[in-house]
Amino acid sequence: MKRIAILGSTGSIGRSTLNVAESYPERFQVVSLAAGRNLDSAFEQAQRWKPRVISMASEADAADLQSRLKSAGNSGIEVVYGPAGTVKVATLAEADFVVSAIVGVAGLEATYEAVKAGKAIGLANKECMVAAGELITAEARKQGKPLLPIDSEHNAVHQCLRGGRMNEVRRIWLTASGGPFRHTPKSEFPSISVEQALNHPTWRMGKRITIDSATLMNKGFEVIEACRLFNMPAGQVSVIVHPQSTIHSMVEFVDGSILAQFSVTDMRLPILYALTYPDRIESDMRFPVMDLRHLEFSPPDVEKFPCLRLAYEAVEAGGAKPVALNAADEVAVAAFLDGCIRFDQISQIIEEVLGETKAGKLESIRAVLEADLQARGIAQEKVGRLARSSTTASVATSRDL
Image (spheres, helix red, strand yellow):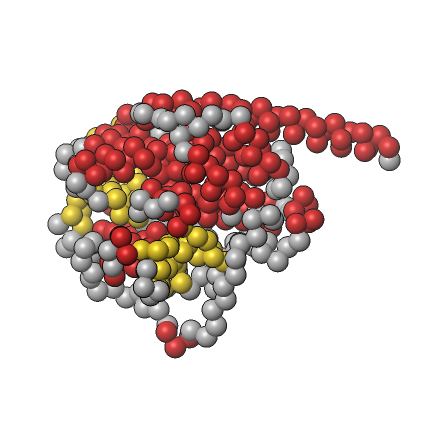
């Protein structure tokens, strides 16, 4: 019986993990949950799974949940809150496997503390690896515990790497759908709407990751994550556009052999793989091989999608640069979703923030979080400047009419 802690239990990955656990009750027990701000979902999950501990984002939500659980006769569940509560969920003594699925750097400290506590990690939070991957992987090696990727691309790479030794790998190929604007001329990017950017051709995801997929920043983050997870230089991690999203990733070996992993586009499969590694167990997720007809591949257009280029530059520089990359992207994407900036200004803000960030080696999680906070401040200033400029231009235009 594997005892699971889930960071981000009310998000899509968290819910899929609970679905997998429900399908294999003889294999998995859910012992702790970090549920964030979704009080109704947290209550339902606590009722269903009866974890030892459940954490909410705020003290007020924790108090509300505690009251609702008590009224329902479940007063034995410990309810905690805030970053300290998330760390408690991640480091609970009974848990032996932690699924890290909190979006952004909010889950960074808890993930790192779980690694320090000797837990095996199922990693679905790429921002942790972007911001502090060197620290996390170093601690995982020290503890002798695996970091098992849940992102479909890195999970695919992990599976392919079982076909050879690391010193036999020539290149990792990360596939990208190309997003909704693969054929859109760059000249039209300033007029792209939020609704258009949220219309991903393949996956249904949260808003930030969907916008990141539209800019190819998500693929840039995956390049950085691959470098850290598999200890590969950026020059040996390539991105290839594959709109069918059938092949999730490939590994090329020194003899010229290439192993590719493809499966149904269902996140339950990489979650199941991570939870049961090194074993494989029976599931009902079957890929219809007879439906396989045509596969397209092409190089990404880094001129049209500069976020991918910026990610390569950040990982090669190291230190605070990847931290700033993630922080600036989060701020810029939120500003675009709020209608404060244009789609094409997302990459502009990120590039300017990177230009003002010194590389500098980061020796601790605290240093990472400080660099993150500083980069967010710079990005917010730039968002404000662009928003004011846009407002001024709109006023001037309306006066001319």
